[in-house]
Image 1 (spheres, rainbow, N blue to C red):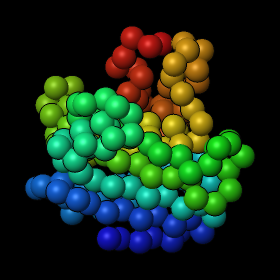
Image 2 (cartoon, rainbow, N blue to C red):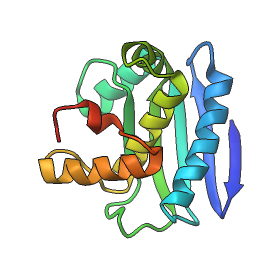
Image 3 (cartoon, rainbow, N blue to C red):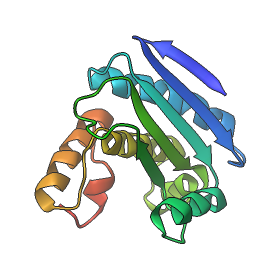
Image 4 (cartoon, helix red, strand yellow):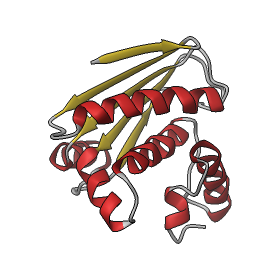
Length: 159
C-alpha cells in the first residue's frame, strides 16, 4: 500500500490480484490523483484507489450493483452530498486488465486509460453523473479539464 500526503490530501493506492504492471499502475494513479485533486482545488481530502483484475471488479460489480460482468471503474462515495466536500471522498476501484484491453481497442496507452478511469471515478465521487444528456455534458467538460482531452463520455453516445 502506498500513502501520499500532498496539499493536505491523503491518497491511498492498493492492489489486489491486478497482475503484471501493478507497481507502475499504482505509481501513476498516485501522481494523477494528486494532480486531479489540485486541479479540482480539493484540500484535506482522503481518496482510496484499488487496482484489480477483471475477475475482482466483476465480483465487486455484482455485489454492489447487481451487474454480473466486469467493468472499467467503480466509485463508492462516502458522502451523501459530495459537492459540499469535506474529508473522505470515497473509494475508486479500477480494472487494470480492462485498461490494457481498452488501450489496444482505442489506440491509446494503459497510462491514459488508467488516468481516464481515475478522472471519471473521481468525478462520480464528487456527485457528477451522466444519466441525463445535460449532466453528461457537464461531466464530459470536467473530464476534459482533468485530462486535457476528451474522456470516457466523449467515446460514448451519452452526449
